[in-house]
Length: 409
Image (tube, rainbow, N blue to C red):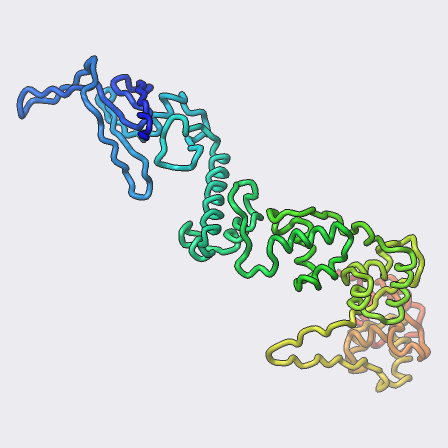
């Protein structure tokens, strides 16, 4: 049986009245070249009948887009053939739009296969078609590494996301699974059915030998979306709601010293859920002892590798017992009389902070003597000097001595 002949339709190229383009991608010209002699100028005329067909070779090896050169007003214009077909059948291209193909085949430029699309939509559709081809290649037995080389992708994460359906789930194509995946699609469906029926994450993870976090992501549809099965978005499903007796019992056992992991295995929940309940952040309306500040005493942390760090030695607290009681009393009296701390530092050979702590009562508080809790002003110092006897030795240690009554600059 022979195939029916393909009907070729010709239309005039918009903007170029001397050229026609066909639905099969051929271009014909009405221009005729005239040249009287070898040195005479070339003259072009437009005839009523076609004068021949133009060659449309591709310009680049990697891009199989045929290109043709058209003349208008004595100038040459190079255009892609599919652009001429879209102008002739679809009309002028809208703003911020590009020409796309329904089947993704860059060689098929038939008018029924072309359409205008926005730039962002065209990129998403192109990526979706690419994802479909990748899934089809993977279903035919191509490995992930070969797919990365074929489609020139440098990272394996997006490839696995596309093959498993996490990326571009509506692009089509058969979903696959990771090369190192522990569970298949049948196991994923069974896990989701068990979770919807009320099984705990711990029981499901133990049965299929995977972690609780991966189990939670699978049953909630965060991973393996295309595997099927009922998705469970809520953490508490069916009989997983704890009763009042379970909450009180859990809090009592935690207060008695039972670890979080042991309670999680006993009640079929995660360690974080147990911690939230026992510290009072969950089920606050129920009774039972609240355990706050209990450190996790389960599995010990992994030891650090490398050179062990030396423990930092804490500086012993100073006792200030070496200072005599008579000196402390004298420091406080002279400070109350108006002596400067800097003068007392020089006399008693102590640092500034120690003298200040003694005079304010923060050091050796059991020793008698007047406590100075505020900074003396210039007026206070003058009044103290006038009220005291000139023979008092404290006046000799004041800053300035006999010049003390001078007004500060």
